[in-house]
Image (cartoon, rainbow, N blue to C red; front, side, top):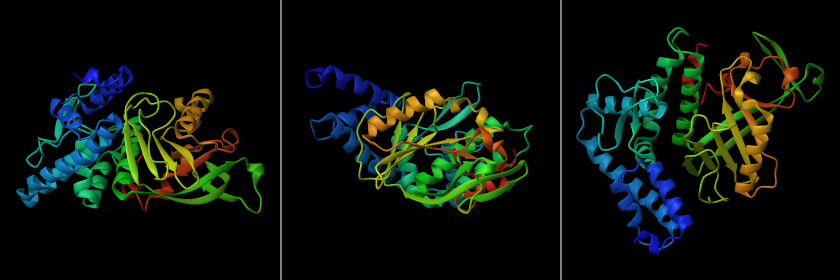
Length: 334
């Protein structure tokens, strides 16, 4: 019996993890069959070994596909990563790793069978997915507002950025610390937009991603992580409080939070509530064991800056400055 060797806390942890797998019995069997006693070590081994197993099986599946079906498979994976509907033709879809579910609005969505299956597909195809991912993202991002709302486009931008980061294992960007117009100095810069001008301090940042952690729930991940590794944390809940993703800066031993939005101005975003942001920042600092203040970045188009005097000392990453790494953003129509 599992309960004979797991404490109640570990049983609860097990249930949470199983739920995150999608409740697939074969995955539970693979998890519990890992050759160790410590449950957290079982999870680590399961993730490593199962990704290899699924990627190997997927590679054999791909070897049998024609070029046209391989192209269709990449279309399926890209749509899965972006949370979109499946293509009309699914001749290249690996049905061992995919599922098609009904969204809240009744729309069909193509998904990975579980997070490990998703990771296996991204690992196998790697940079070979980037072109397809950009093309699929552009279907939504370049469309007129009558076809897709800014809310929908914002979710696609978020998932496109996150998936590209997962594939490239890198996130390079220019951080801007916004200042009031009176903050102009020798060290500050002036930026002109269609909505006016603002002043900022600029800082170029590049982060390598060693580990990637997907987690469910509304708090922090249930397990520890390697604090010597640059780690990308990705919440699975769309309504996760305050942020869309997190990055652990292993060199500086600090946690960074990012929120993507197309809201004009971004200061109207519901996640800008200062109390909830402070609460979540404190929770993540405690989880990471960091004594450094958590940095919060807003990833937005330039016209969403709005009136800088209301966002003084706020950090932003402009989508216009990410075009080289995320080419689909060039065609954003919002």
